[in-house]
Image 1 (tube, one colour):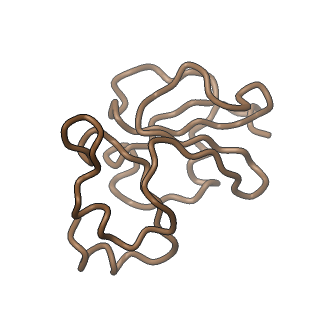
Image 2: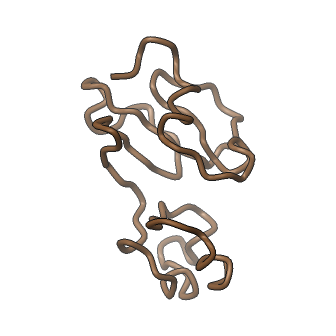
Length: 116
């Protein structure tokens, strides 16, 4: 993403690193690091939104932090080619029509009655 497009995005920006963001397996590409992120890009992020615990990563996990206490896991790498697992769902760009989504919108794709 070029800086011009990045700066058009509203809100605070976080990057969960994926396979296209690094070179040589672990070095984040310099043009990505140069963007104005809320915090440095990271492989995973455990956070809260609307009192809901959320674990974010590029790759799908079978288990994730505080999973058994109601944490949701959102990931993107597989582009909906692997089955959903419990409270874990693919929310990669093609899967959300390349549009930003709110937590409530993303929670609507979770199994009914399972969110905290």
